Length: 120
Image (cartoon, rainbow, N blue to C red; front, side, top):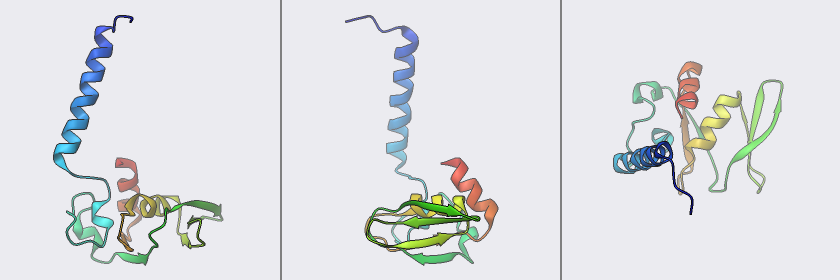
């Protein structure tokens, strides 16, 4: 077995450290977008969700569909289709989906949406 260089060991150690920190925190991206009240509101400040748009979603896996004239589809294999106002909103919806949660709250301000997507 070849020797592992010290910088590879350091990198591996750092990755393990980051993973342990992430697991310990227990926070996941887009937690606040779920309709579940037991989930902490950490990712998007609740002040940005006062006038949030709520959309119903199925329990099926969401994915990006066609993009046409500024509209991005969010679809499932079972026929669900939602026309998002753009790629950022579509990504937010997909990332926000949680098991056994059928309602997603979307911030109405584009800047908030963009920041949430970029920080992920």
